[in-house]
Structure formats: structure tokens, C-alpha cells
Length: 409
Ligand SMILES: O=C(O)/C=C/C(=O)CC(=O)CC(=O)O
Ligand SMILES: [Ca+2]
Ligand SMILES: [Mg+2]
Image (cartoon, rainbow, N blue to C red):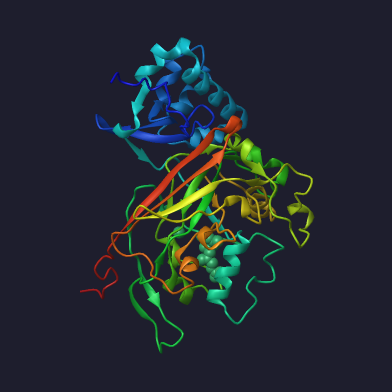
């Protein structure tokens, strides 16, 4: 069989010219050298080499951004530059006149190592699925109303730990911590026995904002560069004991996995959809009734050791990413390039649409075992019936370390 050209994508490939996600890669011949890349089919375009190869297509002014070893300089450059770079990449990959020049810059995906694509500044996690919040409320707080009284007035969130955001493929060591079941007399310390996943979608901030200048709903596209997949690993036993009254802490800060590819926001224009009807009118800064549809029709799939566990529908999220950003900054807090905020666990109304094991097993387990591998994938409808792939976020659970907090010798 003749070798297939990297430009001839398989029919229905979700990484065609309408997707073009950005990442960071290295190759075996220079493992210490990280380079920006764009995924095209089963190949990665070496972005750093593009300005020299195609000076008439890529503005020379962008050469330094593209030669960086992380996406942050490109993220910081702002939306007009994102659009210029995108247009140049698309031309490079789709105009047959450039094939001979571009072909040597395409590396087979199987030959590269993918890295965390951006330096994460702040990390925030929301709680914006009504189905998830209702289910978790019933399990964690059976004597209270399932949704707290503030839930339909603001997108609840908490600040997570940016330094432990890891790229897809990074193993996750089972964390140690304190836990105490209601019937226990005292807490015990040890490896989590209720390690869980949370299937989420992440939004990556490019353009920073200034202190005291809230980012309104209409400025979402100015600031948000793109979308990734997130697995917010959660130790339910640690979480249940520690979270009152300040919220999640060590039960979630040990690792948060993100996909290696960040897909530009504009790739999801055909996937925009109206969010569910809000039965409580939001305050003006969150009122999106006059705005462009803020929901996104992303179809997520959760697999445990290869077997499909559920298919959470992102279109069912109550609060949108634009509302989350407006809320995140309404007190005057500023955004930094590389801020990551995640949607919160995505769950739909059906039993096979739940985004975590806590819900899938109604709080009874089983939870993750050592050696288990969890993979989230997703796609969205694109123009003309094509699929926009979000890649995957995968991670395997490694056994807990031996007594990491043992008494000093
Ligand atoms: O309701 C709670 O006490 C806790 C909920 C979560 O663990 C969810 C969380 O991290 C936010 C989310 O992913 O929706
Ligand atoms: Ca979460
Ligand atoms: Mg986490």
C-alpha cells in the first residue's frame, strides 16, 4: 500500500481543517526541545519552523511567539493575532501550493511526546451542572435541599491548585489524607479509598484583564483562547471530611489532568446552542438572554479501562463559560494569561450521562482501583457535518506511596 500523504485525511477525521488545535511537543532526537504544534489528522505541524518555511504566509512579526516552548506568548498576543496565526496555519495545511514546503514540518503523532501546552496561572473549578449538583447534594447532604439556595443565582466555584495541573498521560498517584466517616470516633490517615474522576471541560484564558475591570459576557471571546478536556480527580473520602465550610481542598489538589490539545474557541461556532431555560432570572451581569447562545454542544465519553462508562452532554450545563468568566471577574479580580477555569462535572439527566463515579454508583462505589485507566474524549458538531475533536485526557492510577507523611526518624 502506498504511504498515505499527511495531507489526505481519513474521511470523518475530527482533526481536519476546521479543528486545528494547539499543543506543545518534543521528538526523540531532541527530547529537551519543546515546540509548538498544531494537530492535523494523525500529524503535528511544527509551528516554530513555519515562519521560515513560509514567509509569505506567516507574518514575520509572529515568529517569536511561534518559536516559544509554551503557548503562553501566543495566548497573551490577543485575539487578532490568534486569528492571523490560525489563518496562516490553515493556508499552510490546505493550499496544495505549499505541500512540498510544509510536508517536512509534519511529524507523525505517534513519533512525538506531548507536554502540558501552557503554563497554568490560576485554576478555578465551577459546579455548573444542575444534574451533578443535585445528585451530589443528595449524596453528601441528604438532610438538606439538593441545591444550595445560591446555586441558581451564581455559578459556584472554588480556586484550585494550578501547580498540579498535569497533561494527559501523566499517572496519578493515589493520594493520602485524612478521612472520617460519620460513624467513626476519630479521623484516620491513609491512602484514599474513594478515588474518583470528574469529567469536565476547561477554558483557557489568553488575553489578560486589568484589576477592577470586570469582564462582561460580551468580552468572553476577547479573553478566552480555547477549550480543553479536564479530569478533576477527586478523593471523595478526603473531600467529605475536609470540605466544611470552605469547600474542596486536598481532596482535589493532588492532580488535575488536561488534554494536550487546546482547540480555539472559534472552532465551536457550529456547536453553539442555547443553554437550558433558567427558572430563576439571573442578575444583569449574568443575564445572557440577549447574548449569542452560550451553550456548547460537546459530546463527552468517559471510558474506564476501555469500557464506556457514560456520555455526559455538555449542552446540558446550566451556567455557560461566558457567565462563569463574568462571575469570576465581577468583583474586579483580574485575569492572567494561562488562567484555566473548568466547567464543573458534566452530568446529564440520564443514568448513562453522569460525569463521576460518585453519581454513577450513587455514592456506594466501587471507586478507582490501582492500575485503572480513565480516558475522556469529546467531539462537537462542526460546519457541514464535520466533527471537531477535542482529543483526550487520560490517566492511570498508581498505588499510593508508602507512608509519605510518616513520623520523622
Ligand atoms: O457539593 C459538594 O460538596 C462537592 C461537589 C464536588 O465535588 C464538585 C466539584 O468539584 C465541582 C464540580 O466538578 O462540579
Ligand atoms: Ca470538579
Ligand atoms: Mg482536581
